[in-house]
Length: 242
Image 1: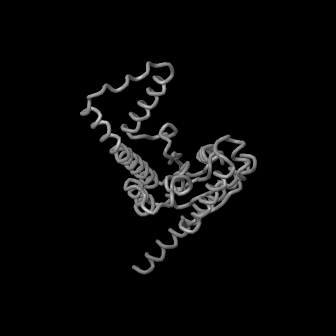
Image 2 (image 1 turned 120 degrees about the horizontal axis):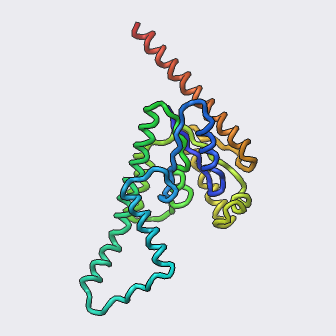
Image 3 (image 1 turned 135 degrees about the vertical axis):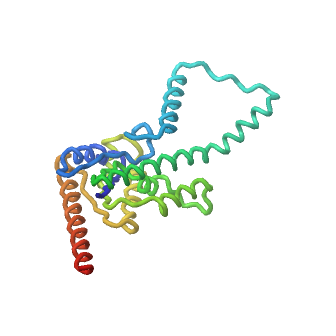
């Protein structure tokens, strides 16, 4: 069927809007979280579940747990191992991240093949573009690999909906970041219009039912157009071969 990505800064209402639309669409629909926060994802690889468990265990240990012993002098082998592990850690993290991203894109493909509309809460490429991408003369190799996958390999959603709201409103809703950082992410999100087809903006500075109604209508109209175009193409091919 088709995939629809709801993007925007924190506080724009992506999760609330996408879940409500999944519940109300008159066609089969599936909700999927497509952000990097593993704890927020509704579908995870076993390796990612393990990482989430380890992080939670570390947080529990840090709340009143015994302090780690200081490294004893002379244990150079152990120190060398940990230094090597520290150098490899970004690449190990990247390997799991790429596996997780590929897994979720595969799920999107499978749900679309089943004839479902897949509502994506966030989108890896959009979030990277808005928050993580840095203009560097020579970024680290692991960052270049990840950027290549996001920009050139992973499929793009059929429809991208940007939930727009003033930085002051978003800051009041979430209390995270600054007005300047939110404004910058807003600018970065909007710049995706030059690289992404079917990019639409919806005013999210309104009551939730109004925003849901606009996004709902946008998706349904896009779906009807897609079905109509597919039927026209099939009829044209049948006419040529008859």
